[in-house]
Image 1: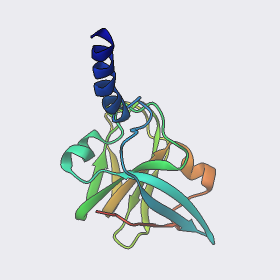
Image 2: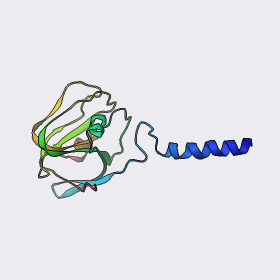
Image 3: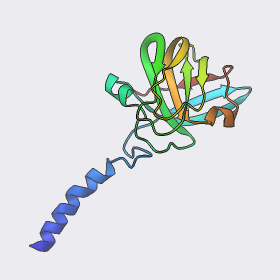
Length: 153
């Protein structure tokens, strides 16, 4: 009887563990391909998509790290002035504000963890891409780059 109980507990615990987060990544979250192209080079990424208002409000809060080729994109239904803050975000991020045509409006590099200061786009944008802080400088990404992704809804 004890062995049966142990097997039952383990069978219930394993599926829950597969969907849990460990602070640095979400194991069960689907990602989409995204590319940043400039000066004849393309930098590929796999990013999470924050589609809903709830997902966008949560963003990358409480994460303790991001993969070098990972991040999160926040697409908007229609272009708008975007304003983000770093409340409960524990790691520095590069925020790339993307116009509807895929061009870059502004890059806010190494935003300050847990800051309540708004980080605002320079104009109307269709999406915001968050990457690990320092990624833009490391790869030489600037406002001349173009960003493309397949939403995969």
